[in-house]
Length: 256
Image (cartoon, rainbow, N blue to C red; front, side, top):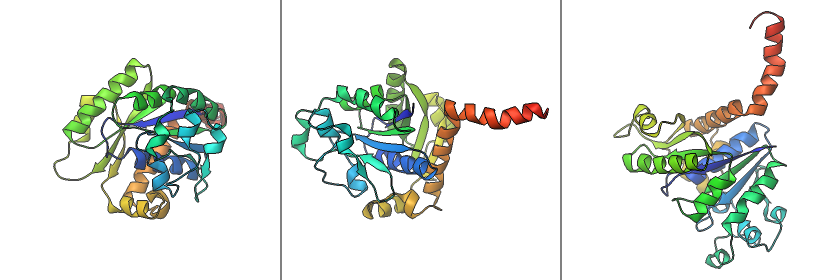
């Protein structure tokens, strides 16, 4: 059984979609079986960023009971599987967000990781994404309004008994930013990745690809690779494997 991670945050424009895409691709590049799902039903951007702006089938049609889940799946040129949204306003009419949880459960039976790009805010859309996930990654910018909104997301996740995997600090600059210590103190959650402000992100978007693929040596890419490594190390199944092969040998040799 795989794990579903919701990439969430109360404010728009903080880097949720960029984080969702690059995290999914970082895991995929590490030979993980990954699917990326766009749960931002009002303003879906995953397909736009990755070269599938207009799709005949999408998560909207799935949640409207018009098609099956596998019919809404597309293959990015990198090999990553994505389930994009429909950018047409008419597609929202029959969408039932409450059905998302059941479909995510199905995906977890086939994939190691289901990365869910959530809508901004704390409305029906974003709550459906939270309810469908095992853990949430909270994305924010290093400024007080963004951190305050992130606290709301964390509190709601806690009320829903959903684990908070950590905080992803995006658009980090050198001047006037809140410090990591200040952010962690306010949120009572660890900052597990820091993504700097970089024009390479926009350049990658214009090329319909991810910065982690086009500019793998950039600080942004290194940040997302550290994030995926963190999630892999926190996965219970992988800790069991590590104990089986490494800790057992160390125990036998008296090194542990």
